[in-house]
Every structure is written in C-alpha cells, then in structure tokens.
Length: 63
Image (tube, rainbow, N blue to C red; front, side, top):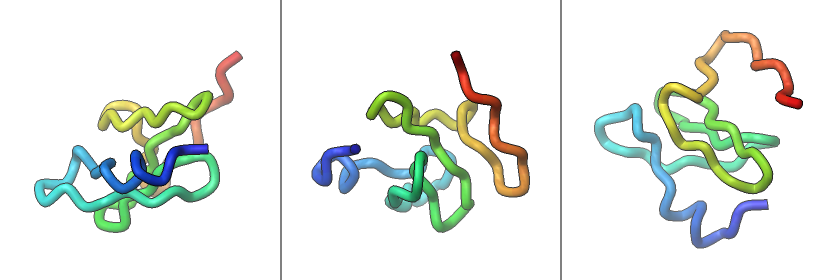
C-alpha cells in the first residue's frame, strides 16, 4: 500500500506536463501515456525504463 500523501506527489516522468499517477492493482498508471509503473514491496518504481508500455506483456515475476 502506498501512502496517500506520497501518491499525491508522484507524477509521470515520461510526460512533459507531469500528470499525476493513480494506483491501479499492482502499479501506478499515467492516464496520459498509459504507462504502468510497478510497485514492488510497497515502493513505487517511477522510472521510465521500468514502465510497462500499453499493449506490452507484463514482465515475469521476479523471484
């Protein structure tokens, strides 16, 4: 679970106007570019290179 105050601060690093991200399932979603940023062990990984692009298969679970 991500703290509500932290979630309010997070924005999409891939979009020029830095739209806010929303929590959906196991990730943070940008409503503008539709990238999904993973949340692992409660830590958001808001890095463009780690984002799941729309239409891409989800990455395999890390063990």
